[in-house]
Amino acid sequence: MLTIYRRHRKACKQRFDGRAYRRCLCPIWVDGSLNGVEIRKSLRLRDWQRAQDLVRQWEAQGQRVEKPKPLTVKEACEKFVADAEARNLREPTLYKYRLLFRQLQDFAVLHGLPCLTDFDLDWMRRFRASWKNKNISARKKLEAFRAFFRFVHESGWIPTNPASHLKPPKITEPPTAPFTREEVASILNACDIYPDKANALRLRALVFLLRYSGLRIRDAITLSRIVSRTINFSCTQRRQGPRFIVRSLHSL
Ligand SMILES: [Zn+2]
Image 1 (cartoon, protein in one colour):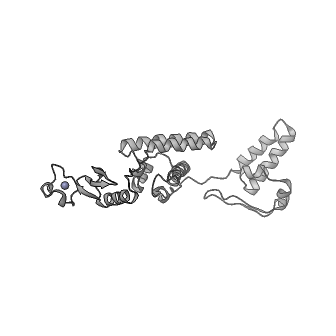
Image 2 (tube, protein in one colour):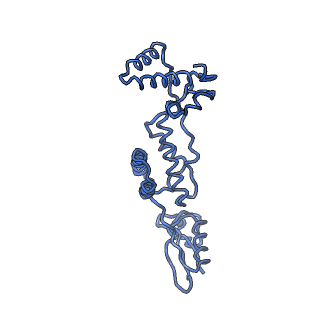
Image 3 (cartoon, rainbow, N blue to C red):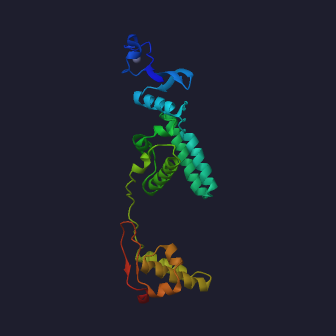
């Protein structure tokens, strides 16, 4: 049978009430015997409910179960990087994570948040507010930050994942302006004077395709010949910019 009690500190006003008083915040100790072994030790807890739960757990299992030590921010970052390397992520991606983790660890040291569990939603928001990144780069960074906390949560190191509640930043980049008539003319002119004549023709065709379809360059260059002859395309909507719709590439 184990009992818990508060071991009052000298400064505690209820000190003379002894074990009978438990409504202060003095450290909680446990006293009694477990499987015939005498125990009297500090639980390193101040929350009565948690202390009670812990001791009940000991009694149920017939032995002392140490609280697992919470993982530090630094350890978790190292584990993530090791996993990312094992997954063969590309070097620029790894670099991005390392940069983020350096900032996260500096932030944790600065604000006294050594453990992952110290990072609640409010601290996450404050960490994000400390970034200098804007627009797309801020969004990419948030994605990386969330990927890290998803990893940490799925590994069972934090009970909930507050990072999933972080809202993405608003992107306020100016719309991509289309080329002017003169710019298009000089691009076509550059195609004409391209030294390799066969490629000059291809480049010209590509420029026209881009100009009239509004396709992304990656989509344009991977387009198959048949598709490019028969399908109607609606273009990529450039961010808040003008929108072109091409009814058919036959009309080119
Ligand atoms: Zn006390």
